[in-house]
Length: 254
Image (cartoon, rainbow, N blue to C red; front, top):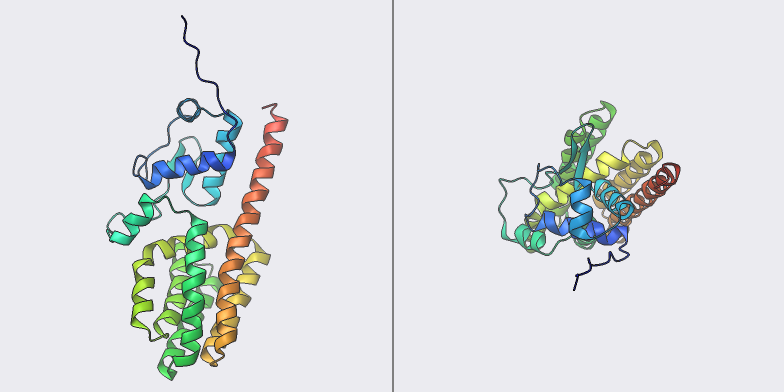
């Protein structure tokens, strides 16, 4: 009796993205490694070519893969290979996504901002304003995205330090490189858009003022709305790029 090949199930682009992300987080696909060919991936995942392409586009938007013209798609190096913190390995093993990390940032940083506004000293305020000014200066100088991302991250870290809660500061430090990766993604995908950048600039200014002026409730809301706004803007951008991918595929008769 001749065995039939298993039928390909209808799999959404999001599920394709999750499967490939799991390969990345589990170390099956390593940072800098080129992804298997489109044919190999469709066979391995038992998905259609269109679902695969949409899934890869989701991963590009999330910053997990990079596509280089004429060379293919590669796993992005979001986490420094030299970092070996146990919590980061745990997060990798659980296949956490960009949006999961942004949720964690929202929870921790909103509380840190509220505490910083209540407990921050004048020295803390000086440091927070300095970090904010450094970020503004780099943006006006059209500095490299990595420099801007690190300055953005340093501004938020200064607020966390001003909370004067050593446990909270330690918890946030455990996520340091993962948190920085979310900032890199926002700088890469949101800063090039003028309206998105202006919105982020206003949110940073509001957060800085609320914390340094001791407005605890406003500081908490400002931090929460800032991180939530980043998540929503990235999701909107992801949806827009998927619509464009759909349109391209229709034009190509796929």
